[in-house]
Picture 1 (cartoon, rainbow, N blue to C red):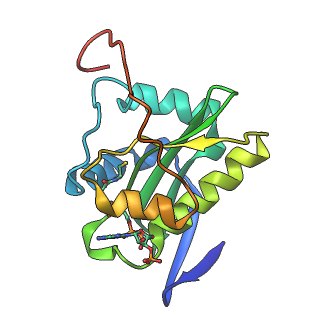
Picture 2: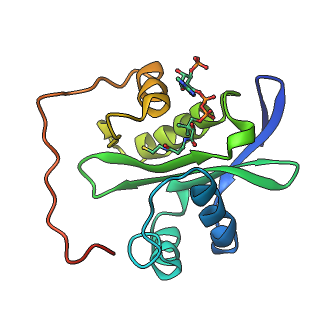
Length: 151
Ligand SMILES: CC(C)(COP(=O)(O)OP(=O)(O)OC[C@H]1O[C@@H](n2cnc3c(N)ncnc32)[C@H](O)[C@@H]1OP(=O)(O)O)[C@@H](O)C(=O)NCCC(=O)NCCS
């Protein structure tokens, strides 16, 4: 389905494994850290696409992928991950459109709380989240335990 975001004709669609190389290119050109040997390896993306095809979305303009978002859920909460838009297409509402579609897909799964982790210095992402009604909780510390740095 095509919709217009700030005058552009954009299609939001599900991602497939055929999009993998382009997805990686978008993350790279966005300077977004990702885990090519871990959660964002081709094998891992294949598993995620098969398990939750509704939660991995891309924005396409003229048949070219220009933005991606990977939502996820373990059943309790929903998460928005790795959202990125190619630098030359930013500021046109594409990230907002991707986020709204991902939220809709999570809600269809019965998810009532959606969160995202953002680096404190990432003002565009923080503003994006705030513009869509997300509120920060400065009291929460993010703690992780990792099998390896690649995970
Ligand atoms: C964050 C990112 C995805 C935003 O993409 P985008 O398509 O330009 O965002 P949108 O045009 O949909 O903007 C939505 C809102 O985000 C905020 N925003 C976007 N870019 C901004 C910027 N450069 N500075 C401040 N706020 C910004 C605004 O509040 C905007 O709402 P408004 O247009 O109503 O003012 C994009 O900057 C990006 O790919 N960054 C690199 C990857 C990254 O850091 N991803 C997030 C990981 S958590």
